[in-house]
Length: 326
Image 1 (cartoon, rainbow, N blue to C red):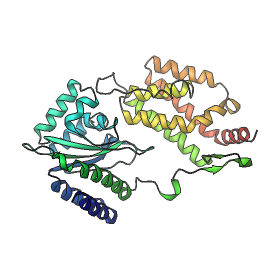
Image 2 (tube, rainbow, N blue to C red):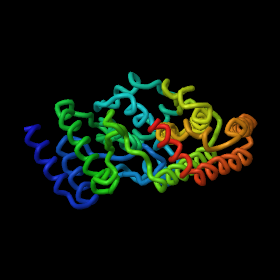
Image 3 (cartoon, one colour):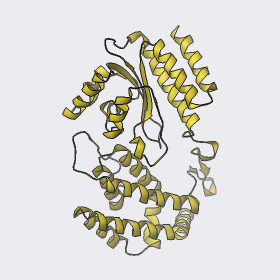
Image 4 (tube, rainbow, N blue to C red):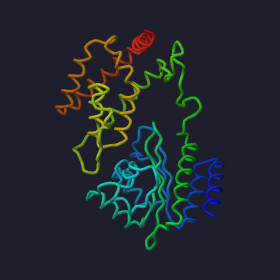
């Protein structure tokens, strides 16, 4: 029965032509699994997200208003727990996945008061995109029926992929990751950026760091962010500093995006000394403004940093090409 239901749901999701149609499918199968509520979303502060994001749900309006007012997209305890596993989990396992703070306990108590009694969450992690999940919840007096959890795992994954397709978040044929053959047939590499693509990267880097800078706040126990081990020192002091800015914002999506930008811009940073002067002095200025909590000064130097590289794109690409040929 479970396999047949899963197959039917998968076919219906693939045939769906709108987000509303997908929402109706989710609503129907949520009830079939013995739940009353569902929520499929990216883990971002949706009203203020700098990139397109998905949210489809039938949670109580009171919870949605509280959730957005408190900007819980990145810090909600269920969302944070889903970042630590690639399989679905019942909410009863939260204390085993993360350290629940007093604020987390208050959030969970608030969710129960508005009618979200128990739940099961399926993580959805796509490299290069914001983390997400699909959750199913029961109302007061009901608990998650364990016999339906394998189906919930499949439904959550299939529904999230359907939402990516219908919302336009899923990559198209034109921007799928690909490899190209290196010169002299000595292996494969990721294709180099065009001038337009590299300029877009510098603009995006400046924009996301500016957003993080505006949202810097004192460290809070809800935001247990850490720098991945491969980042520290490997990509240089500027990359480390930009990670610090993202960490200071307390937003896990800022951190993920900055780390991705560091990776993508690493080849350019390696050839910068051949094209740009006073790079060390530039870093010292950025470091000094950040350490003194001079946001306005840091923003000015950050703007100059990105404008210099935006103008130097042709030279940076030429230096990168020359290095690959040598």
